[in-house]
Length: 293
Image (cartoon, rainbow, N blue to C red; front, side):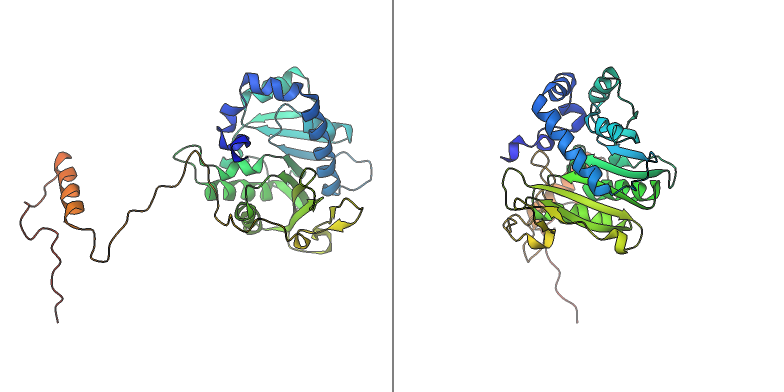
């Protein structure tokens, strides 16, 4: 159900309060799922197997569950999250990574080319929600992917496990990643399984090349699949859903004849209340003038 999606209930910094953050981290089921998703994201990063530790970015690191997987793989990491409660628990758990409290939708303030890779587990779809009047999903996606691209070393990958709400939201996220300069696409594991199905946005920093080709997803029978093989996507939901909590304002209906007298009178009254000079109302107010030859 859509209502069960956390991003539709409250902004992340509010939804993941002290109680929810502790509940999330203490759930053995969530810990296990997070570990599996993080391991798969690291696998898709395709880091060189040369024993050299890399510096990775964990977007939406939360309490550091994904970071632990990065540490176990022998790499260093920087965790980025907007929830102070989640980061407080990460500090309590004494995770190995450096933690940054920040809004990824405002961009990442990192030096160019300093990061060797990035992962994010169920985090970037939050950018598609307008939680404040100043929030515009397209601007936030542009800021995030643009600064992420600059912070990654050339040829480095970024892998994000995502839960897009519909096909259009998936295309919105992918589209802004491509505009930022990334090459890549969507990898779908177990595309024909309702429970096991997982989507990963796999991006490579730099122009398309053999190394930037999108990997294949895993299947139940051991076969590999690409996102092009999956034709079971719901085609009914074609519009980008910003958020059920912040539906776009309805456009005012305008008839073929124009705004109408009632609308003009209302606007003139509003202007008078603001102390502005407004022409007096007459029988000619809002009347359409005849066309001149």
